[in-house]
Image (cartoon, rainbow, N blue to C red; front, top):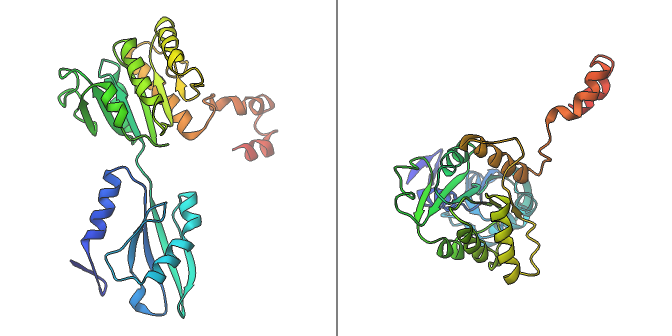
Length: 283
């Protein structure tokens, strides 16, 4: 226990918060910031987007329900913010701080392209998992910076891996049969990843789709990006990593991936001085 102001704050709440972020689960930290009854100021609780409530303080169930109900808009929008509400004879103000789930990048296949992709993923703030079925490839000496290095079969891993709209999967395996195995496991899941990218030549990609269509004739494959990456003429593993991560960011941020200069070239032709008003509205 430690004292903050005049209140004793139990560390278990913050341990729960740390546990949620480590498990890649989004969570809100609620703090009552204003009330005429000073007893309630500083009271804290954790609240999941689905409404699961936790506090290490004796908060009455009626107050818990008001906190859950009145934070619903922020939880739906997944944003931090302040809200006010009435409870008992009091007017209360509460600040809800949103801790988003870290975006999870799963790289299947720990070959030469995986290394720069994993490094770039960490640089961009992703929680990075590398999976390969070969011990000489899936080890910490090759990937010291990533969050997880797993050595097991692709089939077993993708049957049980957590999939959410924060999950981005790259298939960089050493052969099309491993792509097929991985995709079969993923397509049989009810949960869907936000993105699945698969590297490979046209011949390899054609072979993969041919096998998948037999087992999944009604599958649209809308969330499967192959050949993976944006068309920037990438040749080296580092360039390929840039191409791949640029496409993932394009999907994550729901952007076009077009050059930013495209939208302003017409103003350049006009002369920025003559097109000042339109240029300012664009920027």
